[in-house]
Length: 277
Ligand code: SIN
Image (cartoon, rainbow, N blue to C red; front, side, top):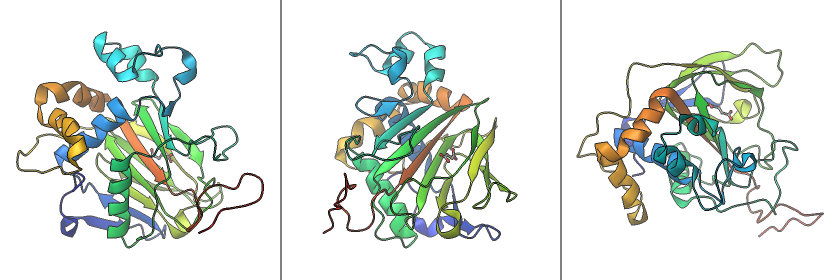
């Protein structure tokens, strides 16, 4: 399901000096890694999802970013995409979610994240917002905390594909010395408990030798639902997959999924009233 190997084979670690920081070492099949890469590049980058290039007037209204990059082999445009937001859109200035600034959260990403969450025992996790970060070899992400969500008890799930990152996770203060972890293609990070509000960042992307998304095994199923067969077909056809593989050879994609609302809460309160079931 969802491009995973059987959960019985997953290697799950908690970093001893950082309670609540859980790493699942690449539980994806190659087809699974390819599936989520294609989704991030070709589909989640489409309107009405929000991206950093929306205001740059680089992509005409009737065109899509990935298609434009492919048509002209436009490497400059390819490198311009740095983030996409899904569901409740992250507001980069105020860091406050808004009920009026919300798109549909993709069903496949919901189902995949809920599957990981429930496998780890988080049976009530509700994916409501995601930031997809697109890194190139010279990209970094400075230290920050993710504290905009109402439910800070709910963990944060982060999926990485492509080149390796050095990921630093510290404590609640910037003065805490951070713990470094390599995040390789397919690795999942779960920030829970004491690590949920910890400072973290990505100071360096490293070029890797292995292509974790190759080779594909024809017997690997990637069942995500019949609506997604076209994407699975791209993953299985080497010529269709090629531009996506080329992208991963020089870049890293990170999908960061959060629950925004508290359990039972239906929407963010506008002025005062929160609607609770
Ligand atoms: C983030 O903290 O927003 C992204 C972390 C990562 O790229 O691994």
